[in-house]
Length: 207
Image (cartoon, rainbow, N blue to C red; front, side, top):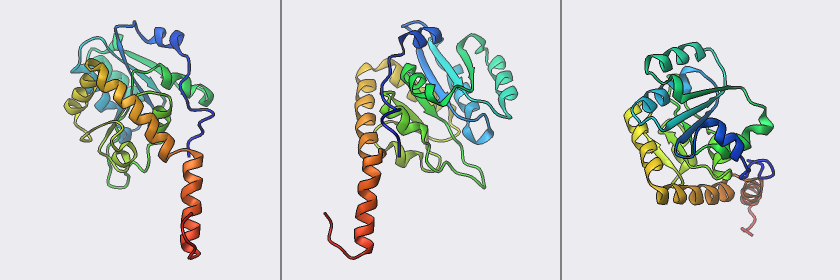
């Protein structure tokens, strides 16, 4: 379950200003730099978008050198903010500073995304989420965000373009995401389902 005492909308105007101007659209990623997380797909998607789309990449991992080289190859040098690892207590503030949060995971023969915890965390911070079709991501997002086929950079670019150009859609995703995360992924929601499961196992009627 996600701790709502930590994950909620934070005031982050100063941090947002560090990423880009008010006219720019900041797309965040928080996670490892490994092949299965698909950060290269996000970079390729950004290269298909206008210059006002900025990437803020938080994390580290064995693919960082390759990803930096790809960003250079795609001429994204001035549009990517490499944040490194940030302290866990700062993550909600960073999420609150993003215009969108993306989880672009891809499946491997021995791995599928099992949950994608950053997605409900982002929802609780009032940030629209975009995820690939990998593993459990569509089940986590439901109708509260946008999905694209894994490995499809063009489709991801189109989802981000939709969010960046449609204020009504973005506001709807913020509201849907917050409501879904509160309903499905908080400590209270998990405890309610646990009690129901235990009562069912014991042959007791539902409360």
